Image (cartoon, rainbow, N blue to C red; front, top):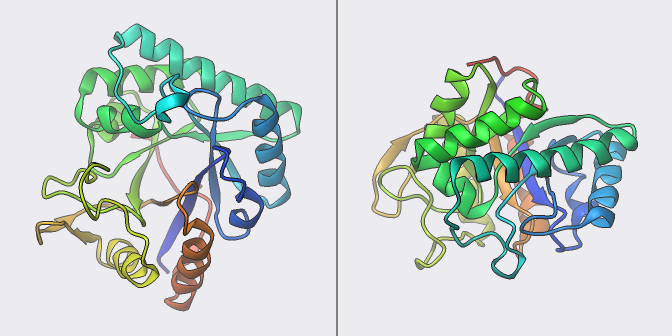
Amino acid sequence: MLKIDFNADVGEGAGNEEELMKYISSANIACGGHAGDEEMMKKTVALAIVHDVCIGAHPGYADKPNFGRKEMNLTSEQIVDLVAEQIYTLSKITLGLGGKLSHVKPHGALYNLAGRDSVAADAIVRAVALVNPELIVFGLSGSLMARESAAAGLFFANEVFADRTYLDDGSLSPRSLPNAVISDPETCIKQVLQMVVQGSVTSLGGKTIHLEADTLCLHGDGLQATVLATRIHASLLAHGICIDRPTWLHRG
């Protein structure tokens, strides 16, 4: 049976976390960098525990005005410190509430940079290993994050996106481009099934790109997030695809 982890970026102020938790198996919780604060982290972690959803840290640039979507000029060590601090903050809150951190997924511009820049990818992997080498790293399918995680012997989940389009090189379409974000449920579901069942995605340029899908992401801050989560969840189950926590992953 095919299976996929279904994750969402949450704790970012959208206020839809309680509804989203009903449909996802993993939650990427903002750690106060690009969004969130201690109170929001506690609330979101508590919801994840109640719904038996895997809890992950979602560290990003410390740039709330730009929601972490503007690349910043940081050294490798600054990235290590930035990411490690945010993971540790969420881990401490999670343990205090009786939960356990399972994974780490960088956010926004930091995520995109790590997909193409080995120095940034290595810095994030080092930060994860510094806090807890048992944590799973979530990164763009086939990106440099996969390579660096494998080199460090960390668990890695190839991530694909339900509500974002792709360029011909397999990277995500920049948000500045038209059609970068998918909001139509039917278009979204069609792409999800292609990625999960066929192991490919069709780029904006019409190219079929091979990818591996371990975990499927839906952005929790999207206007259609709750609607899309409901429809994706139902469609996956209707096609005999199991939505499961990413416990089957192996170290690189």
